[in-house]
Length: 191
Length: 190
Image 1: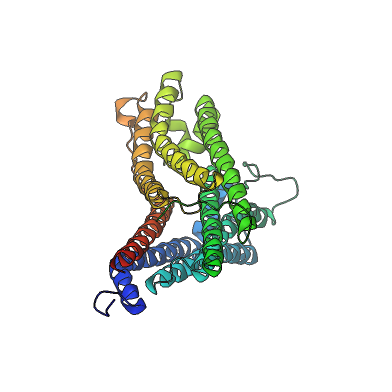
Image 2: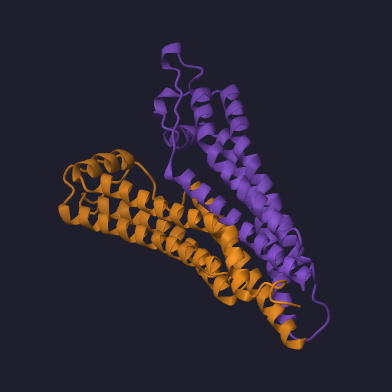
């Protein structure tokens, strides 16, 4: 064996980086674009109280012309918190592909980040499901008792099931990889 | 990547049992998810009220401008089956993937290939959703007078998110394949 015929760990890492770097960077920036686009949509809609009154009034089938500023601010805060939880997904996507770029693929670190990514996805779906009825509650707080919206309380939408399945898929894959990594480590120790 | 199983006792046996349990659980979840998706779709297209209240606004049509007679609903159901069949294929791949783990294969050879197929399916789904929405807008307004036919084409952040998930799975599969290939190359050199 000579140094010319065997790739050392630095060479291996470099070779792997060359093969996957483009895709890893693409996914990282696509995730950033997604969360940035989401924030832009939120800001363009929520910074104008009249637009919020009109669109939510139409959606809930109630008159929101007398919506107090404090309630509008509360609702805006709820939406921003919901967005911040979704942004956690992007943080973990960034970190996961950072691991891959460093050549840390079948490692405990990468698997842990992938697991956190899956759970962040689950948390984002849960936050969405909590935010919807919370917004309905905030928007109807100022109305007289007995005035009800034209819509029932909305917790879940069909897309939530798909999002939840996607997030749980990542959690399950991470769990399987972690078990694989642990078994491989155990086998190495036995050898 | 080699297909391998862990047999007998010793280190890793508990992990191995947990892996098999998780594989079985995920097979069950995937199968139930597929069945519920089909049932939900059938239920939606059997209910004119839900079409008017949920489907029409979702694809950008006004509730009063749509037609929900029997033929329209059958066509709508068939159009909705296009993205759903892609989702079913992805679920089938996920089932087969988790079935390997359920059967005790720790590093199944076909895992990256199945992950890649799931990723491709999700990308296809992201493209098919707006296309199907456009088809549904035509189907639901086909019974209107000619001046009220509508073709609504909408792109949403939702579709982008599904595409991102597809890309994420594809990238994970690609990175795994490349790492395994590189490891195999190194073994051959040694």
